[in-house]
Length: 303
Image 1: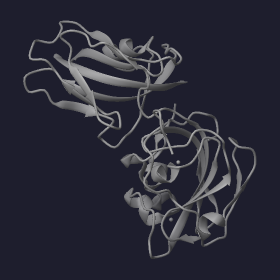
Image 2 (image 1 turned 90 degrees about the vertical axis):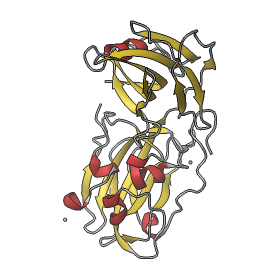
Image 3 (image 1 turned 60 degrees about the horizontal axis):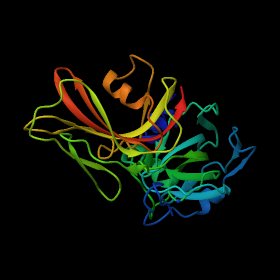
Image 4 (image 1 turned 180 degrees about the vertical axis):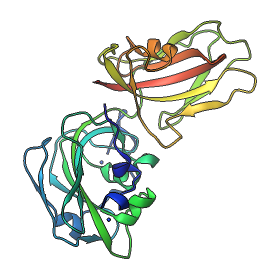
């Protein structure tokens, strides 16, 4: 499973170049990128999910981010926080030449719409639907800074991304809430699903433990899968602190390979056998300390 490269999402293109959601699909964006002259000038032909033939005028410029729907899908709409699987072709707006593609082999990790790390591209995915082919015209300045640019009074050289929106996952665990286990950390959820974790004043369990907070009904994860999750982890102790959180660090959904030796065994064992839609509380001992993980299981892909 290949991650979306920095060329596409953080996004340092200079060197290489010298949409209403509910029920876990992500929160509705306050606004969506509109089409414009630059995105409307893009033509992309060929079957959905296959590398398209892209044609643009040379010397293409744009004022901010523009998004046009080349082919309209009928799937779920993408909201803020939704993990999305895409295939893409990047074209240099100055020369009209293809700069990079995803490979169109199903091996690209999901990108989270609206996440900080996804920058302008992540914002451009909001309001799209699964099955859409998008033509996205992005100003190079937005890409080099990672900003989620939507408008600009000044025209700039464009970078064009033709994106096939292949699949979307829930933005949070959607399973049925379960009774809390005695002596375990208390978990409260923000409106977007981000967990807040309060550990008890008692000592942590001596061994790793797993407790189900929400019971999903999706497919069951196996050791052959790569899990798509969001998580928060806190240290267990009187001075408990957040050790990491994909909800707040700008990364969005994470991919976790479940083969032995790839991740901490306590985390791996908590995920193998869980179902998509589950929210799992895992007590894991690492490097001499105990941590409480709350993990939302959003989906899986085969490695």
